[in-house]
Structure formats: structure tokens, C-alpha cells
Length: 317
Length: 311
Image 1 (tube, rainbow over the protein chains, first blue to last red):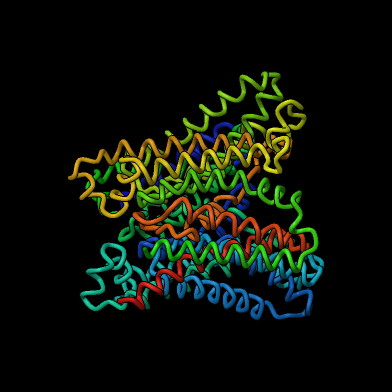
Image 2 (image 1 turned 60 degrees about the vertical axis):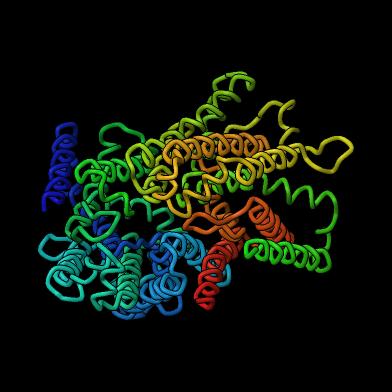
């Protein structure tokens, strides 16, 4: 819990400091934008956290998100009256399929997930661009999408944006599974020591495969929500997003060596990084710094992690 | 012995790809085109040569393409600021070494996992490239230097920069395969603790590799910038994929301890030939990325499955 508290404290600090410079930053509109942007990253970060806890990683999330975002647009081009539920389910299913490909490859190759998902990062993105070229559709705009779908992204219930609500529900469900279900606890055991987990009879392969499917499915959901929020999609949606997601997870206190961390921390990390990114222009820092901030935050978080835990753990990783 | 067999397969594949492309694709087999395909791959080949020794020790450097980008942006910003090119060259080389040293401090000094560190510096260096140069381009590099990255040595069809690549490749091959340092790389990759106990200064070797990697990336940045006569913050985006693919396809193990310069050279030639043949057949960049991503996955899957069979 102490680690989530650190991210929360940093979040408060950034918000207060920025609000002092520009009070509009914490106005209703400012907060709304912040939560909407953070919700999509938080969904990705929750899925990534599940994987990182098992000592794996999925670098292809940005590409999966892009593929499903573009896929939602294509569904509406085919039939503007496609029910919103169908679009959401199709996006999640496509994401799960991508995650299953990753999981199967990692299981079959027995090599670091990083290498496999670096490959699928480009393969999935290529499929995305190939789809755009093959159909001659390079961008889908809001006027082609169903009003109900756009409402999903921009609407709110009792003042809370739908996207934030969806992210919250996902957070609670995944958090419950990880904390209270046996299969969830087993993910931590796998991340702490895969060999030992195997010896005590945990179905390591099946659990890791499921973690990839969950991460893929949440990336799929994030893609659909991105489309419904922005109303414009092309084949480049989500490019480079993996850096911010991995950074959010690590900043939120999920150990990159696996075995510890919570999805609440990952979501807080996503909120913190989104807030920092949003605060940059307010503080007069050029937007060019955004990527550098994500990278620096990742480096800072793993350095702090090492400083706190001492060096003993690293010998194994 | 097993390694040599894999390299023979690669060389055979090269022959097949080049022969098939020569027969099916008009213009492929011309000297000018072969020089072009080599030139097109020079920068990425330098990145792969920077990466191989790191991978041999069981570590990784995913920041190579971002280091290239930042060094290229720096070249552009300095040139834009009126600094003579003779001054820019050493400054950028030192900058590359410093960027490598940052990786070295984080990985070796703080004992952090190289995967996480170099994903971080991948983002950090690319971000800094934009900070240095914004999203514009700097062009108009000096006419007396540009031919070094574009033209062939008079009387030969081999371009200068390919000559540079061959020299760098030979130096890396010499160090890796014929010196105590090279043997230390394999020893570290096969078992770091054992290597440490047998007196190899593991930390010093790894730190030196990251600095050398940064330096080579700076060389690649200069070649890249002069070749396209354009310094941009997004120069070389995604080239880490091509470099990692070449190293693993070349027979290096991602866990360290196995791999040769010859294998990587063959893999580079193979990907260069494929890339050029696809290009001549109007296949887009995105599809090229699919080919590279698939090759990367295949090059980790095949040895894993082969190993499982043998057991």
C-alpha cells in the first residue's frame, strides 16, 4: 500500500502545484479532460499490470488498441446502425484474439515476452495499416458513427464521465480477482518464482496465457472507447502508447521483476502520468517533453524501486 | 558446430532470396541497385553491430534507434546554429558515448534490468530529440561531406559508408571472436556468476559495451543524416526492431552466450535483400514492418522449438 501512497502523494503535489500556476487546471472542464484521457490509459495499465505481475510484459498494447479503434470505425462504415453493444464486444473479442496470439507465442517460444511482443507490436500495426490500404479507408470521422456510440464516449452519469465509470468497474473487478481469488493470487506466485509456482502445481502456462488474453481484451476495450471519445480514427491510433503504459504501471509500484503490485497502483500511475502530461503546457513546458517525461518517469520509478528494496533482488532478474 | 550450421542456412537463404529477386524483379541485380540496397541498410547494420556484443552478455539495448535519433537531432541543431561540421562530428560522437554511459550507469551502476532501462531511455532519448529539434527538419548539409554517405569509392561500386561498415564489422568480429574480452562476453552470457568468480570484471565489460554501443549509434546517426541530407527528431524510429531482428535471426541467443558476427552479417544481408526486393515491388513500409516483426518472432520460435525436440 505504501507504494500506491507514493504515487497518490505525487499526484496531489502535481495537481496543487499546477493549480497554483493556473487555477483553470482544476476547473470542471480541466478535471473532465484529465479523467477522460486518464481512463483509456488506466484500462491499458490495468491489463499491463496483470501481465507484469506474472513477470511478463506486452509491448503490443498500443497496436492492439489502434487495431480495435480502427476496427470500430470500419464496423460503422459497413453499417452505421451497428448496435453499440456489438461494436464493444467485437472490439474486446479482437483484443482478446491478439492477446491470445501473444500468449501462445510466448508459451511456445519460452523466450522473454518482450521479444515476442516487440514483434507483434509491428505485425498488428501492419495489419492495421494493411486494412486501411486494402479498403481504401484511411480515416473514419464522427459523422459516420452511430450517435449512441459517440454518446458512450462523451456522456456521463450524475456528472461522472462514462469512460471513468467503465475504467472504475474494470479496476474493481480485476482488483477483486487479483486480491481475493485463488487464480489471481497464483499470478503473484508465478511472478515471484515461476519454477516454484510450477512445482507447487500452479498451471503456469494457462495463467500466463489468460493474463495475455486479459491484457489484449482491455487494450481492445480501450481502442473502442478511444474511438467513441474522439470520434475520429485512423490506422495510427495508439502508436507509441506502450511506453506510457509500461511507465504508468511501474510508476504505480508494480515491480518490473514481477510478483508484487496492484491494479490500483497501475491506475494511479496512469492518472499521475496523464496529469503530468496535461500540466506541461499549463506550466509553459513545450509538449515535446511528453515522451521524454514518460521515459524519465519509468527510469526514475525503477531506480527508486531498486533503492528502496536494496540490490539483493536484482541478482535474480 | 551447431552455430555454423545455422549460418550456413542463412547464407543459403541469402543466395535463394537474391537469386529469386534477380530473376523476378527487373532492376534488382544491377550494380547500382545492389549498392543502393547496401547503403539503405548501413545505418541499421551499425546499430545491429552495436547491439550484438550486448546481447552476447545476456543484456539488451532497445535504445539504439532513439540514440540515433537524438544524435541526428543534435547534428541538425548544431548545424542549424552555424557550428562547422568538423566540430559537430566529435561533439556528436561524444554525445553518443554519453548516452550509452547513461544506460551503463543505470544497468551496471544501479543494477537495474536492461530491458526496463532501455525501454525507458528509448522514450527519453526520442523525447529529447524532439526537445532539441522540434518537429521540423534541418537540411543542406555540406556538399563535401555528403558524398561520404551516398557515393561509391571511385573505381569501385562499393559506397564509402559500406566500406566504413565493413571496417566496423571486422573490428567487432576481431574483438568478439579473437580477444580475451570477446571470450569474456560469451562467459558472462553463459553464466554471469561463474564469470565473476573466474575473475572476469563483468561490470566493467558491460559498462564498456553500453558506451561503445552509444558511440556506434552516433556513427550511424551521422551516416543516416548525411545519407538523407536531413536531420529530424524521428530519424530511425522503429529501427530497433530491425536491429534486434538481425541479431536474433543471425543466431544470437536472447539469453546470451551464443551468436557470431558472421551470422548477424548474413541476417543483415538477407533482410537488406528482402527489403529492397519488396521496395522494388511497391510494397509499403507498413508491410515491411510486418515482414520484420514476423522474422523476429520466427527467429526466436524456431530455435526454441528445435531445442525442445532435441531434449
